[in-house]
Image 1 (cartoon, rainbow, N blue to C red):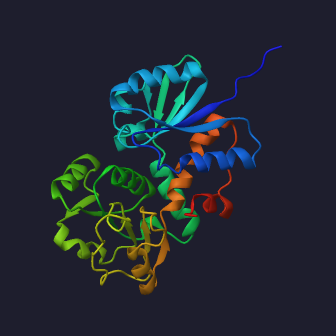
Image 2 (tube, rainbow, N blue to C red):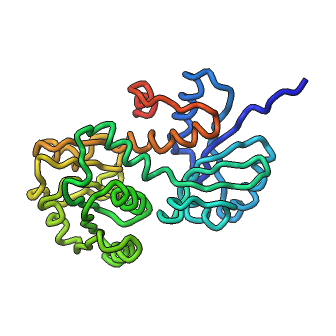
Image 3 (cartoon, rainbow, N blue to C red):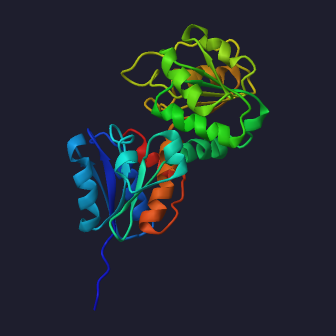
Length: 278
């Protein structure tokens, strides 16, 4: 008699103790009565390649990847999806039966799905989008907004050179604004996204003036600590539809869970509650 291996998955980063992914995946495993385990793994940069060759031998079927390894995965993986290559980072790995590593990026999917589920009236083609920040998260946001049909993306970042680099990569739909003109990106914008760390607990405040923001705009913040950022609160006072960042974290995790454990997880209020601060 043969006994199937219990599937193992986890999240790789350094540091990793703060990650909420284990709580999320364990919740989905429990409510669906599925066999499997999901664990945090603190792996140093120098050990990354060796770890990825060892994990499949130990019964791991895949892993999530977080800071600081998301870019390095593109060099180590045996196969890289087009969207991971476009975004320039991987966050979801699938280990094939032969031990090869398949790298994907579901951040853009998570971002768009969060908007579609929590702002059902959102029409990406209805007008320009304003995006604040030019780091890794912004790359996923730009790629997904362009794919969704946003006609123009007004990008601004505290360091203009980083925004210019993204414009070079993503093309003429991206228009760069100086940070001192950040508020001007909102004039006529129908989507506004904070993809920077501003407003996060322990980080600097998000002080962009919202005078030009239309009450018809959909506003989202990738920051989810605090859940209701000052940016979202001010936008809600104007009358905007606001979407917090916790949904993106949840939705980006769903495709990996399905590939590893064989079931598409349901995203509901109980799922969100697992990730809320106690």
